[in-house]
Length: 261
Length: 238
View 1: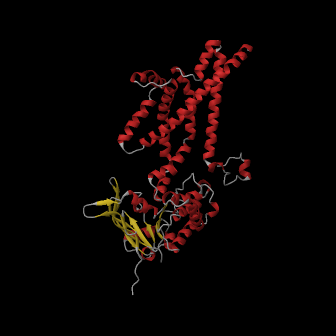
View 2: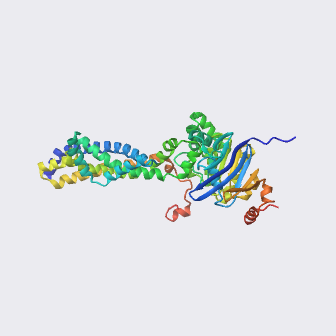
View 3: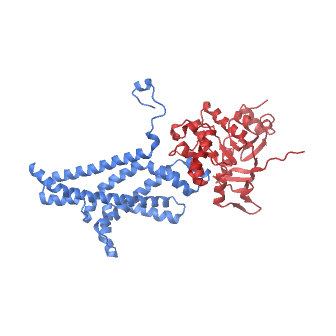
């Protein structure tokens, strides 16, 4: 008896993106299934962050097909490339919120207001309900005690936890993380990583760009190595870190000192 | 000196009456100027050239000609085109158009200066650009440029003296009338300067108060209190 794989949440087929003459994504294929923690690794400038921003259409892909929860957000056939209407893109974005390297909290709003902003403005959740939702989300990241503080009163790690709560308050099926711990000082990294791992343990689907091999090895269900606008190799943690197939990945793993034995 | 005091008692209420008109002119022009300046700024941020170019021309024309010429044109030349305005409203129109040209540039810069990352965060939550501007960008931009707006308000208050050229009975014109009766230019102009100073200084304090009021995070105590050793080094926190 074979086990049915869980349904895909995000499917990319042959996604292309360029800025002028500089082609950043050259035909990316990727599937993120429900409950999976998929990690994108690879050298800087390899297209990881652009890929993430193309998935929620902060950047517009120029060719390829992207399906989110069964609905195509952009589609490509032999001659035509079309992108879904803006309204549908916005709705999709609200169901795959993003956590940024630089936190990007709304600086004129308190912690609680930051977390309530999405549900109230986008989902039109009544304020009283949104307060409960926001408190619950803050509790999950252990930031409830700071709910009345302003972002400039928080440490980097605390800001990132609030940013995660802001994403959680949207009750999304998937969260995108763009180098969530790269801007944190080393002491604060593990706190944020533990929270992200816990979310994965609770069944949330995650797509994470990171440069931290220990984080990948502790949390990833699937690792994709991204370089030169392609996904060169993907597999489990041990596929990539113990038995990399391609020379490029072997070199990268060796040079980053993260080879597992 | 005693002559001056008796003159003062007689004419001070008259000067204050002029100051009242000056304040009315400034406040009304500021209100309209802010609205018009904001709309111009938003229009200039549009990616459609057909909206952007006429507004750019508008801003340049009103910034690059003297206010006094604009006022004279509005009051003395518009009637030839059949548009007759009272001196007061001609003054309001001239000041408003002039101010909005300057303010639109202030607003445009402030809107552009709001952290790009926060814009990305707003969009990634599924907000529409309109929601993003209304809830996040404009409130932050408005507070960020409050001091500059305050500066423009004070400049406006003083520019109102130019409106005396088109016979609006504001502070400076009342002073001129007073001098033609008393021939005491020194004391009168000193009084006028003091009244202008009081109005401008009060406005500046109000703007500072508003700024503090609208940036609540800065009102709180600093999260990390300086230690004793830092305090002894002059109390500066780096």
